[in-house]
Image (cartoon, rainbow over all chains, first blue to last red; front, side):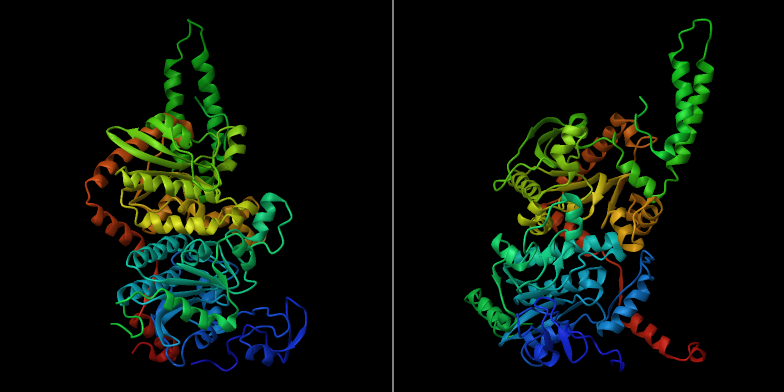
Length: 283
Length: 340
């Protein structure tokens, strides 16, 4: 499927050696990759592409991807520096993904889950019609199948500007689906990764029964530049970081990438209700 | 009375209005100006109609932001009776950018909620131009739940450039509070009517914008990002030209939203925009609200909630399945074989 030369970028840039943006140490790329794209010196969590995330979180070969043939259109004939359809093509070539969200079903240490991932590398993980539709369908499927839902957000772009008001309305759409899932008693765990901002943070990524975050992720509503331009004050240390949100009471746990799978499995077990099947695939 | 503040494209009407004012003020009993006054009035009406039926997207934004445009408190005074404000968010503080309270409209008792931008400097400082903090969204939801408990419908009047981008807002969970409102409003068991009366600024607007009717005043706008913000991203600089281009690209006018299938209704504004005649605007809005309060209150709650869900569920433009596969296949084939 993939063209040679269009190999998807790892979160760690190409080349044998890379520099960690956090500790500034030069590190061996292979070593970071072996450590789940985490800096061996300072534990900085590099970006993790959606496919890698699936490999890390789900049991081997257990992932069944859904709704792969949804494609964005260009209802507004929007052009940023290049026309939107062109931009989409470039992003597909760059990432090997068809859109910023990947959804489906899989197992976490033997526990069946519905999972959704938004990938920052594809248009900053922003939510347009397709991302909104995929996440909404995933939530609806989780409701129908009575499975726990895990969404790993890497949506730094919030609602996608290129689809304007349609993107904004996806926030309401997916939140409404999550309301039904919640009313039906479903367990929803959000995992916030770097970065989760704007319309994503203000919809699906803010609505988990349990909210986890990777260390050092940037999470918030307004962008730092916008805030600075409004208040003209120096922003507090660690502003809008996972640690900042934990301190202010908006997330439950900061979880190192290497522990994420185990933690998810444990949390799912805690929320398992007697009489409700969760260890076999329903439907 | 003619508005004090004039938008650039309203200038052509200034001259005629000045002549009209002079004639009307004339007290000379020997001269009868009535014929001329009638003629100028007619001309003025035609001119305004011409200007306002051809507004660009950016001009619409300017009308929506007109300093004399009626705001939440104007409508509250002109349309509703016995407004009883409820201030408490039960957690942090009273956000003056969002107002909430019981009110009566005809035979209906309602919960009236909305952004207030401020009509003078004092109000504006207090309301931060209608940019709400998390406590505002929390207050709004708290009062909506109260309304649902006692079977009152909810009316949300939306008018905000956006949720407040500040340090305190982030510390107190701006994103999380907005998200919670989207989720809870989608299943609130009472009718909700949402009207964008001026600015519909992104998540800050949507935060009180999920309901059974989503409508806009004719010259309001509703957008995922401000034209200024969009211009900054697209053209690296926000000036008059780039802001106009960005506004155009964002498809943010009531007509655009209706075309995209997002809007239920466009509520007409008086000639020259709502700022020209608060009373007429309020009457139009009142008629609209009464009609849909009546209509929505007759729908069984379960049906209402199902319709509300489907209303948002169907929003989105994409393609799926075979059509896409066929198109990709066609692209891969050499041009000569496509005809087959």
